[in-house]
Figure 1 (tube, rainbow, N blue to C red):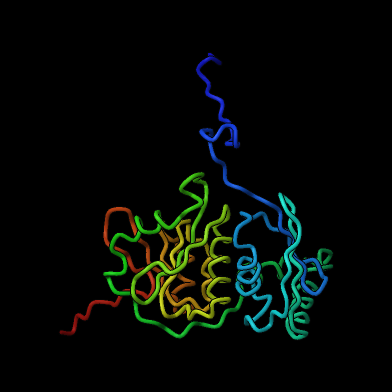
Figure 2 (figure 1 turned 45 degrees about the vertical axis):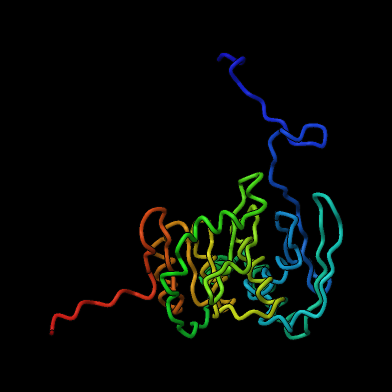
Length: 265
């Protein structure tokens, strides 16, 4: 190997601003009423919105009013979120933890984990598909809205397009689930109706994103990458409009299912 041909990247510093800018990452520990729930690796922006969205999209709370207080502590690569929730929500959180603990001897742990991966979700009330005009230049508009990714790349985004077709919110994170959670938290904290627009994710459309969208009451989810057959199945089952926006062709609607041709006419 000719080592002289290798180029070593340097991280940007005040004395070396021309070096590569890297995306930030930190560990965020989340506790509910003093009970440790999770440690997430996140981009340290919009953390309050992330915790709210994580709580709603994960079914830990049913509505924003179940959240009584939220305090963030720490700095650098170690952060803490202390969340106070209603007694009803805290009881439900403890029930979830109890179901997933202590069953490894009889194999029930796998059953419970499968239920967590394929949860029972209430179907959405169907909403109309967005107008075609709302997709014009959408990829380019989202790229302009990604302020953090403009410097570092390596960040996913989740955006909310309002009823007028404008990008009203854009949240970014190293994790695609985190980006959507931040957006869900922002919608909840701003008391915006998710059904009045649609969400766009720049990442692969995994099944977990379908779960989060349905729990958050998002009627339409647009992905910049093609969905899998399972995500399409779940979107149709739960009345979630699922649309893929390819690079150079028209939007493709996967859910609702396309109407069958009428051969009787």
